[in-house]
Structure formats: C-alpha cells, structure tokens
Image 1 (cartoon, helix red, strand yellow):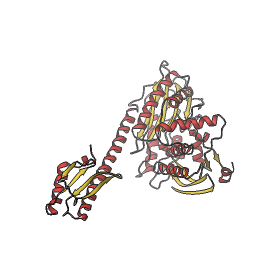
Image 2 (cartoon, chains in turn blue, green):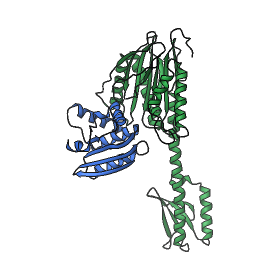
Image 3 (cartoon, one colour):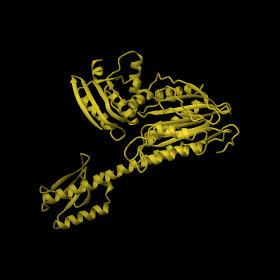
Image 4 (tube, helix red, strand yellow):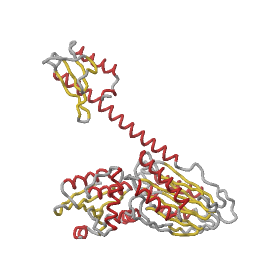
Length: 134
Length: 346
C-alpha cells in the first residue's frame, strides 16, 4: 500500500491510501498517524478513494488512529477499549467527534465500516472537499 | 542473567584462547557490564585496550586486551561477539513468537466442538482450516439450557493472533454460552456480552459474532449479529436469503443496541455461517473469492444434507485458492433441517 501526505492547512493532515490495508501494513499506518500527530496535526483525513481492500486489521488501525488523534497511545491493550468508549460517549453526548475523518470508501469497505459500527465514530464524507469543509 | 548467557561458556573460552594465541599470547578477555571477567584473561593498566560490546543500543560488556594486541583485532573481536549476540537474540524472539502463536492456536482449537449434538430432524457440518499466523474463529452448536426443544448456533471472529486473541475468544465463548442460556433471546444475549466486555475487560482486540436460537420442532428462529457477516439461509427451492441483523462489533460501544430478527427454517432449508476467511480467500493472482461463488454453490446444493453442502463449498473455495497461501482462518458451519420424511442422517 502506498500513502501520500498533504497538509492543506495548519493542524490538518490528509493521508491518502492507495492499495490494500491488512495485517502486513496496518501498524505502519498507525505509525504514520503518530508521526503526523507529533508534527502538530490535530485533524486527520484519510482519503480511502484508492483503497481497494481493508481487512479486520484495518479496523484496528482506524480505531488506533482515533486514539492517537485524541492524544492517546495505542495499541496498549489497556487503552484500547476505554478510549473507544470515551469517543463513543462523546458522540452520544452530542459533542463533535471528528478528529479522524474518512473520505470515499469503496462500497465493500463502507459496508464493513457500517457493519462493524465504526462509522458511528469515524465520520464518512463523499469527497475530500466535503471532509475539509465540514 | 547476562546477555552472554546465550553463548556456551566453554565455546566462548575456546574462542578467546584462539584469539590470545593469534595475538602471540597477549591477554584478551570479556568483562560484563559490571566489570566482572566473564571469559578469557583480563587486562589492566594504562595500555589496556577496550571495545564496548553493544546489544540493542545498550553496552552489555567490554572486550579487553593487553597492549600488544592491535586495535583492529580488538574491534573485529568485539563486532564478532555482537554478531553472535544479535543472532541469538533474534532467534530467541522468533522462537518466542512462534511459541506464542502455537499456544494461541492450541487454546483456540480447544474451544471448537469435537462433535455436534444429535438433534432429530437436523444435521450439522463444519469446516475449519487455520491459517498459519492469523487466528481466532469460533463456532458452536449447543442445546439452550432449560429448553429441550431449542438450540443455539454461534459463530465469532476475533482480530489479532496469539495468546491474547485466543484468551479473549475463550472468554467470549463462555460469556456467549451463559448469555444465550439466560437472556431473553439472541439480541439480549449479545447486549449482555457487549456490556461485560465494555465494562470489565481491557483489550484492543475486536470480536464479531452472530447468534441464532432455533425451535427445532417448528424451525422458528430468532437471530442477532455483532458486526458479523450475515449467515445465509438457502431454501429448498434454491432461493437464498440473508439472515442479517444490525449491531456493531462487541466490546467497542457501551451504548450499543442489537436488533433481533426472526425467520422460519422450513424442512429442506439450510443455514450457512461463515467468517471473512471464506469470502476473502485469495487465488494465486490475489483475486478475492467474494460472495457470488458462495451463493452459486448454495443454490446448486439446496435441499442436500449439511455435510454435502459443506463439502461443495469447501471444494469450490479450495479449488479457487489453489496453491496460494491462506491469509485467514477458513471457517464455515452448515445447519440443515431435513426434508419431511427424510432420515435424520445424511
């Protein structure tokens, strides 16, 4: 999988994924996110328009990136679920939870996100412009 | 315990003796991080040469030699020891990982049923083929406690591999069984398990699950799902329906709710439970198997026994996969309600 990085404005990073996200590279994706956060990015937009496949490891990576952009450290087992719950509670409480945004996932990947429930905490946008503008 | 424990003491002494001889009898030795002589002969005095021996960026010892020994030889000797220590450490790490995967695999296998319950009018068949590294599929068919006429069928998939994944699966299996026995239906059962995982367990692993409760006399079924691939109900006439119910993966959302749906499994119908290892199987050209061939095979074997359906599905996906290495566990479970008047064995 190839990744491209764009910094359209201060604090915002756009990471484009090209290829397949699976057990062989999901950790690298998390590390990219951590590096971007360390450089000062506080909103991560993942452009999935060229992502052709995402395994369950991809679900783990997306969840970990949600943690990273809340200022938390994944994938420490202790941190994993509690941060996820905190994100979910925020959503239930009406506060915006969108430090990580997803753009244009392929239908099978969108179906995976919907079936697993990750779309509840990682908002999905049809294109990059919409994700940047919201 | 020192980093040098991986090296046989006698071999190290013999090797240093060779080095001393090659240096015309000068003293050469290895001292540990505390300055204690580990092997060879120590060297003292202002003309002593010393070269650090590093492992993972940490100095774990020093190669010391008396003056006549050249700096180049000292450097070669120190780097040689580092090569051995690195190699031994890498080897031990690979063995540890391999061992953990093997133990995780054994735990997971022990959670799978050795046989299915005898239920009048129903047959069951399953196929399980673990991938080398990925692990964590679970399935079961069990009588629901307190109700002789009802059975539960579950399938679950945990991300991750090794011992943590296997232990989580053991935990989830026990929780699902207890919940299925005591809850008011599959949706309530998944909700209870989800709340326990959310409140009491700390893990970054994810679990998908599908659970169905069936009245074996009438075929009336209630089902619920936690982010799992929808089981497929193939009618006797070949029509296929998705047995789908909304609900997110287990353990992630404290406020999750699980929908419950109902259907009736008529005589001659069969239910297929599977994990993504089936639809995401790949051929040597890395193409995905997908759902279409599963639907096609099911349509072609409708009305047959669970074993026949299972065999047809397995044969087709294995033919597709060919020599390609499996990426994920291949797991499928078929439950069939025998046509009226048929014998209860296949």
